[in-house]
Structures are given as C-alpha cells and as structure tokens.
Image 1 (cartoon, rainbow, N blue to C red):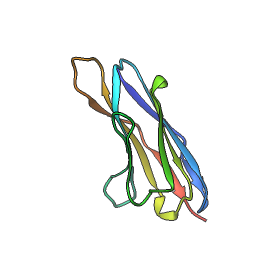
Image 2: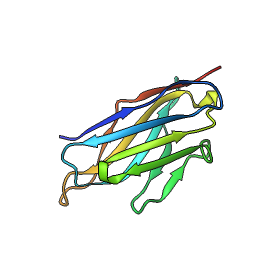
Image 3: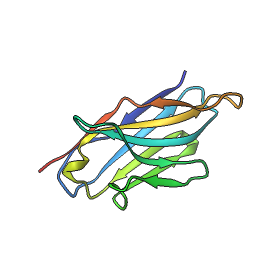
Image 4: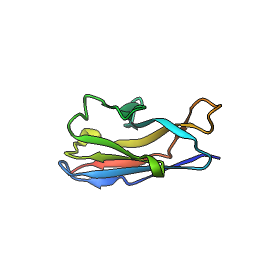
Amino acid sequence: QVQVVESGGGSVQPGGSLRLSCAASGNIFSIPYMDWYRQAPGKERELVARIEPGGTRNYADFVKGRFTISTDNAKNRMYLQMDSLKPEDTAVYYCKMNIRESLLKGPRPYWGQGTQVTVSS
C-alpha cells in the first residue's frame, strides 16, 4: 500500500523561508509526476509547482523566482523550498505524487495530508 506523508510548514514572517518535504513509501515502481498544490481559506486548490518526466519544472506565475521544487528520486522524496514568502502565500500546502505501482499499471494520484503555511508579521 502506498502512503504519501508531508512534513515542514509552520509560521514565518514576510520575506522568510520555509521548506516542505513529501515522502512516498510502499509498493512504488516509478513516480512520473510530482506536484505541489495549495489551498487558501475560501479559495480553490491551485497548482504551485510540478516536476514532469525528464525533470522539467513548471511553476505558477505567482511563485516563479521564489519557490523551488526538487526531488530525491532514489528516496521517493520531493521538496518545496519557499523563499521571499508573502502573506498571500498563506495556505494549506499539499503534495501530490502520481505513482505507478508496476510497469503494467498506469500512474495513480496520491495526496499528502496537507501542511499549514502561515506568513504574517
């Protein structure tokens, strides 16, 4: 059984930094796509960053130049380094890993439990 667990998050002042981690465990053949999403109170969940097969990284315009997504494929881990944080970055952040459990199965989405990030002075 596959599990995806997040860690990190917390409270920080504007301009500060935080690092989120996401780890997958269980029966994993490959993880072709890894995403970070966020959801602020009263808003829709939105895509923040993605790593595609081959390592291409895509970012939402509102985090470009401030956030960096990275992976440790050998450990089935993903990270989100968040710098120059703004109050509008306050949200619950979720990782999503699209995991293949075998060569014969297509990727399925697995979500982390979510972690709160609060940016406030």
